[in-house]
Every structure is written in C-alpha cells, then in structure tokens.
Length: 151
Image 1 (cartoon, rainbow, N blue to C red):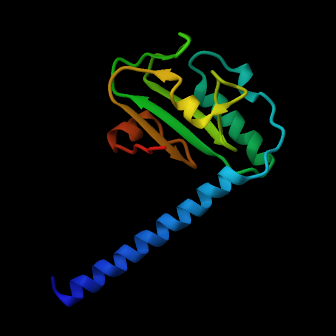
Image 2 (cartoon, rainbow, N blue to C red):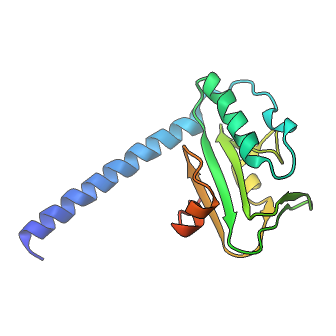
C-alpha cells in the first residue's frame, strides 16, 4: 500500500468513526429522554393500519418535542404476519412501529412493548429485515437495499 493510500484509508476510517459516534450519541438521546405521558394513539387503528398508527404516534411525539424513530419489519415470503398470540398483523409482509423511550408502539401494541419483546412478538415467512430510522422507508426499500438493523 502506498503512503497516499494509507493516509486516505486512515482519513476515511476516522470519518466513519466520527459518523458512528454521532449516530450513537443521537440514538442514546432517544433512549435516555425523560418520558412524557402518551395517549394510546394507536388504539383507533386496526388490522393493516400500522402506517397510519405510526404516523399518528410520531405526530403526537413531535408535538411534545420528543425524539423517536420508526422501526420497520419486512419479510420476503408470502406476506402474512401474525403476533405470537395469533393475531393477524398484515398480509403484505410489512409492519411498522414507533420507538420511543425503550418501547415500541404500534397498532397491535398501542401501549407499547419493550423493544426486544416487540421485535420477538411477530412472525412472518421468509427472510426478515429490520430497519430503524428517522423516516418511513417502506417494505420495498428495506428489502431491496438490504437495510437490516440489528438490536
């Protein structure tokens, strides 16, 4: 490796580390925010209405100036998703919730569940992808561009 290549690699590595550090600090602020009293926004939404429920919860948190993230689940198989207690979630292989203060809220769990419990409460067919981010990206983007996020 040439000296110039080593310097460029070192610089790129430092930029990546700075980016990861910034992301970690921002995510940590989501985990440690002082929780506000939330309404069960998602109660009004039923089967197949996870996107509307997530947007409503996000709007509620924005009004309170609280940080949140969307968490999206997508399966590559036949599309049916059920909860571990057998409730139908979706027929399109896609589900979304809102992550706030260590819990994830959605139309199936309007009072929220701890993040790991929520993630383990859904079953679908095929490869599962999980994406955590500040915007809704949709099933196609999550699967096509392979954006898994590991807790």
